Image 1 (cartoon, rainbow, N blue to C red):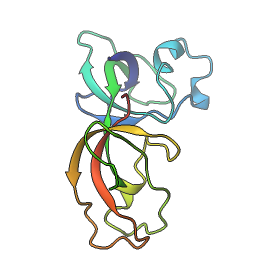
Image 2: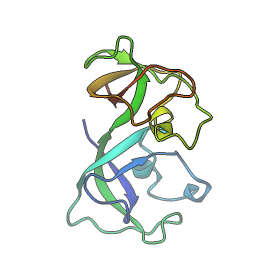
Image 3: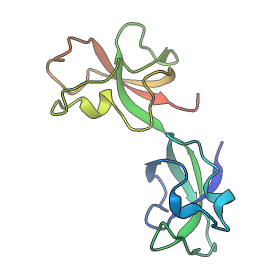
Length: 148
């Protein structure tokens, strides 16, 4: 289900994804707060539609102003434990990884996904992009549905 919100005009393009970080100090006293601060902090969203004929509103945080858009929680590509990983099942992240140079690091610690929650697997992609997991984890690359 989509939600109408205001985001910076540079992000206001269909299929743009972002992680909503919550209220900033610059939001204090803004007359549009209720339209901007209506998302869940820490959640990744995808812009599904940009409201046509909507005016660009001034914003203390976004230099180019904000526009009305429709957003939905996005799926996130991530590495999860292989055991029990199939489309429709629930899975969580294995845990933090100190190997930041690994080609899978961003998939093991993706933005907008919490280590202490489980998410529905929307799709299985297969083996992760690394050759060897330095933490000896058996992982599958999947798309997680953060809304399901």
